[in-house]
Amino acid sequence: MLTMRMARRALLAAVAATALAGPGLAATRAVDAKASSIVKGDAAALGFDPAKLDAARQGLKADVASGKIAGAYLMVGRKGKVVFQEGFGVQGPGQTRTPDEETIWRIFSMTKPLVTVVAMTLVEEGKLDLDAPVSKYLPEYKDLVVWQADGTTRPATKPMLVRHLMSHTSGLIYGFIQPNAPIAKAWAAGGENRNDLTAREYAKVVARLPLRTEPGAAWFYSRSTDILGAVTEAAGGKTLDVLVRERVTGPLGMTDTAFFQPESKRSRFAEPKTPEPFMYYDYAKPTPMLSAGGGLSSTAEDYLRFVLMLAGEGTYKGVRILKPETLARMRQDETTPEIRRAGLFFPGPGMGFGLGFSLVNDDTVQRPGKGTFSWWGIAGTEFWVDPKNEVFMIFMVQAREAAMEYQRKNRAWIYDALATPGAAAR
Image (cartoon, rainbow, N blue to C red):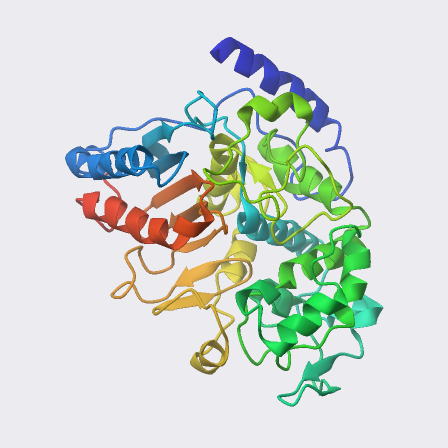
């Protein structure tokens, strides 16, 4: 099994390497895709109580046994080393394979930080300006309108900026959050849920829809990152899948991370306990839409490479994706108490939001350490990087109905087991 896996990765790495020859890229060479990103460490030596970590194991086993989920995969690490990694249950109904680091999951909104990193490589090269109006790259965003309580609209008085897209302060919405709200119904009627368009074509549809608020006034989880994908294509001069491959997944050796997967990988696809065709799309059936907000699928081993790059201040195994100062800029809070109060679906108390990540601003009310940056996907997948405690985690599952529950459980399991918080044991 290991030999076949290494051979498969070697072949995919050779194919991916052909995409890395473009000039001016943040990374000029690639991490060896054949070598696993998982470096195992001793839990006790790295400050965890192994007996308390077992609570995660028993909890996930119980959830499988009760039928709550078909399967899941949890990875926990500290200081670059993995102290817990285990799959539970099966990849999906009718399957016998236990999820492992090579299982492919729909990561949905965990796509957002990765695409934002792609965009930030363009910022480093001077091809994209965080403070520029979106209309500089997508002219149709020049004359936007704002929804009014009586169902009418008025012209926006402020421009939508690129950083507003990255921080969900653009005024755009996700209709599914309040599907019965009049503005959500207007968005649905206007084409919000179309997937038969390219990212650039889709951005033109959204430009005709009314904003919930003036840009920069409130935090609303939204289609912002999908529009950022179109901006990224315009600034980068290539389609989003190519930019993702050239600037992040290729250099990091993430050979199993893509918008759509080949049929040959179907045996590795994770599926939910209860099929929801309208949500759990078929990985192997491409659509024109490359969703920067939620279209990628990935493995735990692949996504760990991305996480370790973030934990490494933009560099993984000698390959730099971002400068440390660029990543630091992404971790600056773009919200204020007023912006958070005016919005909807904000991550929670003690939290902020930067460029592509949620942020822990107050670890007296949040379990991860102050400065932790993270995001999750609607099917329950999640990652975080906790610089204060040097902890990272990746959780994979396909269970939309249990997504928020696992956010609470994972924090309890992991931080209850962290015997020596603060600087990791040396």
